[in-house]
Length: 179
Ligand SMILES: CC(C)(COP(=O)(O)OP(=O)(O)OC[C@H]1O[C@@H](n2cnc3c(N)ncnc32)[C@H](O)[C@@H]1OP(=O)(O)O)[C@@H](O)C(=O)NCCC(=O)NCCS
View 1 (cartoon, helix red, strand yellow):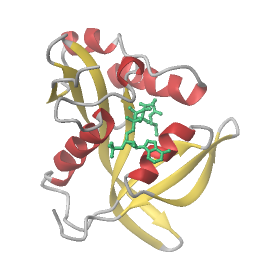
View 2 (view 1 turned 60 degrees about the vertical axis):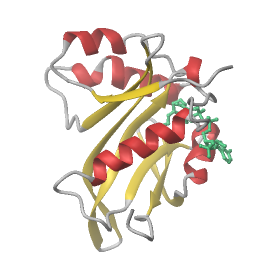
View 3 (view 1 turned 30 degrees about the vertical axis):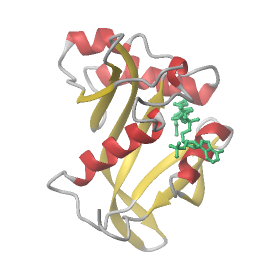
View 4 (view 1 turned 135 degrees about the vertical axis):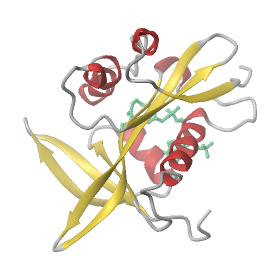
């Protein structure tokens, strides 16, 4: 299968066109994946949302299909009596039809999307070079756990949210070379 020619852009939360385009996202079956779908198709667009953060979309430039998205925001992370601001990857997904696929540069779409998201988050004026990245991944989501570990994320702790759903919090420091 040929590599995908990817383009990345910021989602506009006030755009009806972006909202309509996002309705096609499908990440596969399973409760945790359904939540990812509901974020990008419904919750992000609610008129009284919580923090929306910033969302990057990647698209297949030849077919005009949305391929994936990632949403990040700053968040306070408390561990014991230590609190710090981290770059929180709130939501992230590659569409079912594009999972496991590669770009025309022969890189995985998922890692390319992640790199774009991290670069964007680190370029934010309120970010600092030493900020950690943090995310929560459902304990049953083995595919995503493997992906995050591959990118250098490490287990931090487990949080239980209603109704008895377990998420592993994972964290990764800033790159050693600062780049
Ligand atoms: C999780 C998700 C983003 C991963 O994307 P993907 O397209 O399935 O990932 P790929 O299989 O192409 O793998 C991407 C990279 O991770 C690596 N990887 C994936 N699983 C791995 C594992 N178990 N062990 C080691 N490396 C792994 C691949 O080798 C590849 O590496 P590369 O970029 O260096 O080539 C995608 O499956 C997805 O969106 N799932 C549904 C939504 C979801 O779970 N979101 C995350 C919520 S926390």
